[in-house]
Image 1 (cartoon, rainbow, N blue to C red):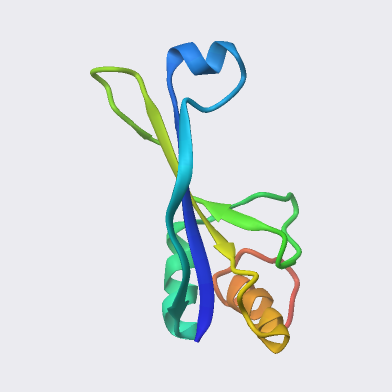
Image 2 (cartoon, rainbow, N blue to C red):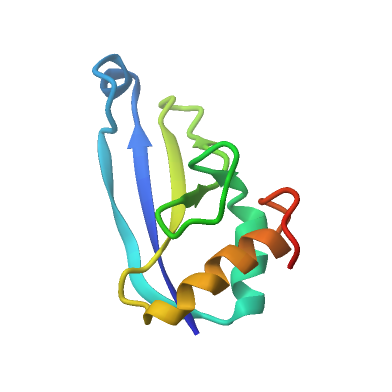
Length: 108
């Protein structure tokens, strides 16, 4: 199992004026996923924090913002490699990113 954490941030019109999120936090921390589940999740959260993505454990993946059209609030969720993983699990984060098609030119 590879442990990941999921975070969220909500940006309102008011908070955007100040360049920050109105609310942010963890949805869950250090939840275990199989390799296959992680690849599937990475295909949904397909916006890497770095461009180009390299598969480093410091990178996270975000989904497209969901917008509340009544308030204009935007919610973005992100998945992160958990620091609670055993050191040998880091290679699987990179391999999962490659399998999800997020790292270009990498042999799986």
